[in-house]
Amino acid sequence: MMELKAPPIVAIATPAGRGAVGIVRVSGRAIAPLVRALCGRDLAPRQATYLPFLDGDGAAIDQGLALYFPAPHSYTGEDVLELQAHGGPVVMQLLLARCLQAAQSLDAQTQQVVLPGLRLAQPGEFTQRAYLNDKLDLAQAEAVSDLIDASTEAAARGASRSLQGAFSAQVQTLLQALIRLRVLVESTLDFPEEEVDFLQQADAQGQLQTLRAQVTEVLAQTRQGALLRDGMQVVIAGQPNAGKSSLLNALAGMELAIVTPVAGTTRDVVAQTIQIEGVPLHVLDTAGLRDTDDVVERMGIDRAWREIEQADAIVFVRDLTRQSDAAHVAADAALQARMPAHAHWIDVWNKADASQVTDAGDSGVRVSAKTGEGLNALRQALLAAAGWQQAAGEGLYSARQRHVQALREVAEHLAAADAQLQAGAMLLDLLAEELRQAQQALGAITGEFSADDLLGEIFSTFCIGK
Image (cartoon, rainbow, N blue to C red; front, side, top):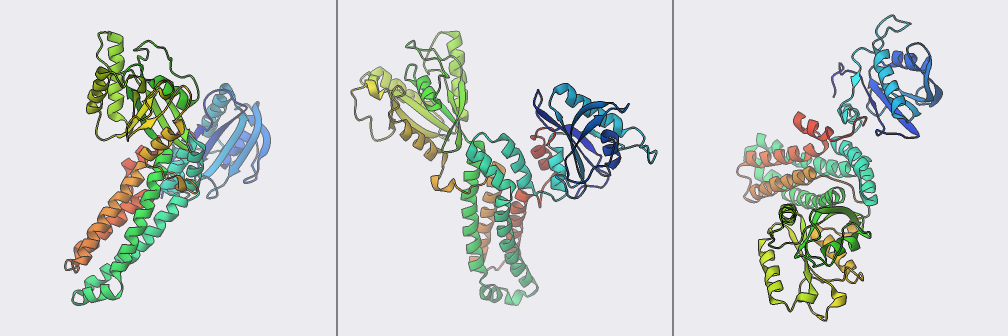
């Protein structure tokens, strides 16, 4: 829980720039005097009131809606005031400055400072207070940011499910099962002469096996959720004039990259995020890979190799019309040998519309970026490389790589605990320790066990005002 002395905060909660409506948000303890200073009156809780927002002389800065949410029934768990005004940047700045100025003035009723210590909010500080005041757990708090940043409809729906607690509910189910098993094991420490028989009678082995199976299932769903949120980095690579830029344009459905018959047209990385069945794929078209004396083209090729090294998947584009050219085929093979082993690999045989070759080999996808032939097969190959399970899309929640890593640690500790139990649990304290560490890793997902530096890293990625 947050310390009671946490200072009040204020921020513009809507994006910078012009808009029909802008919102200034205040959160803190006992902000009723500030409400009176800005609105000229007390406000009924949780009711929108149309009124003028007053400056220090009592003149209207603007007119709009004011909403007051007394603690603890608010987003942050503190008193919250939201001022909805016209969304011009000058109006927003005037309201923000007025909040800070009014907070330091004297309340006409009490002759005390209205709201001492009011300051500008840090990124994510409103949601951080919601977490610290038990309005959200950590996974739900992260889902707030994921919902704002969602790049596809499926990602937005998944983040909404996480915000509503779908992911947290699964984690809590695992936690309760793990806690029951820990209680069973640790209660035997007081009776070492009966520990093995006691654990057998309580079917500790069966409980542990069931828990491991549940963790495996949740881990698979969480990987899907992380993919839904983060997507996958896909690099299109290959020799010049293989049709890489045309392929990017075909996948994106728009003319993003310049396409000419001249080799070496693409000099820099061209990036576009596309979605396939709701999964965001960050696709990068790169310069054709070859030896060249052109300084600018060589810089583009160096950038291409850097992107290839960081790619999750590589679409290696081959030119079907040049498969009888021994030098071209040898150059393809040399490039493939340089590709990183960690990335998923998809061979794409392009220009099917202009080639007489009907069989490009057992592996790869035969496409025509010009006519669209084979593009659906390529999309499915990209989803397969990402590890996407089509049936899992409905009802999926968003997740992050830290959640995946935490569940992997849980699985590892449970596997070690299972090994101890199958060995007869002669060292019962080691079994209990593995279960304790599994619980700690699992609790880190929802924030039951969280270091302050982790919280700082998570909430610093939020936008100001959220």
